[in-house]
Image 1 (tube, one colour):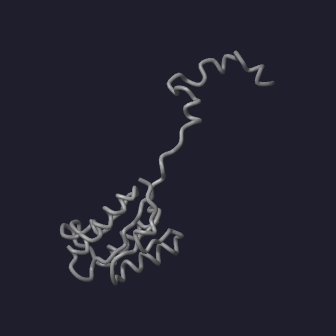
Image 2: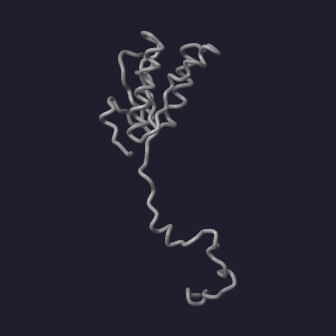
Image 3: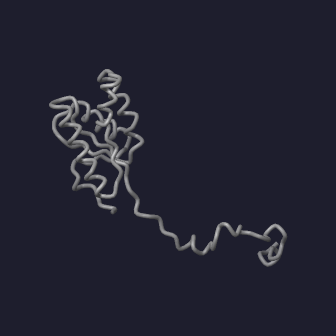
Length: 139
């Protein structure tokens, strides 16, 4: 059977559905620039925790300005006040999010936890950036 034989066949009547619109429009469609979901890995425990949360949020804003989506684990700060968890439990929770992100940005100073997150990201073949300048703009 050739294509010519199928023209007018009952199974092709009404195909494609009118609700799909003009299929030619689909061919010309181009996806929007792809953004990354970037995990912000920075100190939390050492130093003033409020300052560390503020710093991580400021970094998150800069990631957002580049057209990407930041994931800021420091925002669990309030959760810790409501329902305290051990250091190891927080690391376990944070490590569960790392593989769900496209990249990790390691910023700030000394941090055993952030260094463990970097190591975990590398072990799972997740891109690791060490400065905002390394991250391309998509906006």
